[in-house]
Image 1 (cartoon, rainbow, N blue to C red):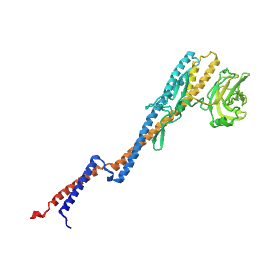
Image 2: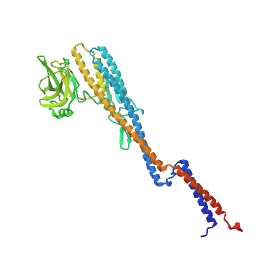
Image 3: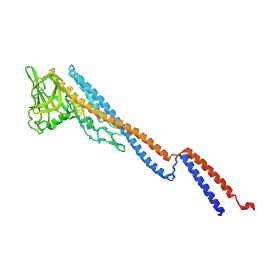
Image 4: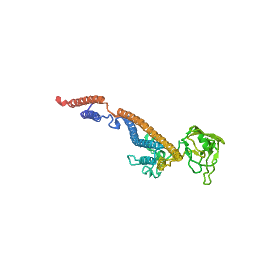
Length: 438
């Protein structure tokens, strides 16, 4: 085959250009640290790197959401801790107020302290987040949730909503607590039923009996008796009543059905539903009827000695706000006490009931606080997983895109030698000519 001079020159030039391009490509790879400068360098790896990059970007957003949720719930957690401190302080003052040696002025001083605690609780209930929205207003972040004072009823303007933040591909995390759940919807008494000294004929109890909050032994029995297991004489306001009598110095009690009609009208007289039984101070009184035989699965304890005609009522718990409980406590402590033992017994009985309600508030706040703590712990685990996943994504992208410098330097040296050889050989070949021999 004959090779013309122009063909030799063209072939040599193409070889030199190809070597220079390869050398320049290697130089660009080493200067950028990237193996793939364009998708044409490795189409399969480029497609996979794009998919991994997109997944990593989504993971970064989830990690950012986790950080935001942690900051938000951390603020809620601190507010709940402050609320718990206020409630515990208030409880200590209420217990102190139960001391019978205190004067009216002493109790009024305690009431002033409770008013300060009330204002602190209201301030916490209306606290804001870093973005300026209210923490305890549900979905209504721009609305002040609570309005009122120690001398007026407190109303809630928020809702029951929980704002959610997507913290992973399959999980949303609540970042707030509804004020209705934390401050408003708190079951009074022991959470199932409440007890109170109700007196008879519109008068306070005359004896020294004080009823405790009581306890539920079998919640299923209580609910069954309340709903359908017991034939209430009224259609609403279900309640049981303990009425006391005294014969020859022996105190006895009897259980009555004190339910009333739903509609307005003449109240039904209490109906006896058990036999007359002897009373022993401090001994548990089971809530068991004999007419008909129904076990409510609960019991109460009365300390002291009730007088004949004294009554105590047991009724299902209803919701009461922490603010209402505090207001009732403040009102009770501000009312002067007479020197008679009857009034002091009535005061102690009411104080015991309010203290039980305050305990329920603390239980409710503790429940919410525990829930928020669980969310924070879960976010901590998610954050650790996100960090580990991001490292895996980074490693995968590095394997796909990053340059192996040892191999690149070797290839660069080889390509440099190859280019120099091509250049020298081209010089020698281009110098061959018959004219040199003429």
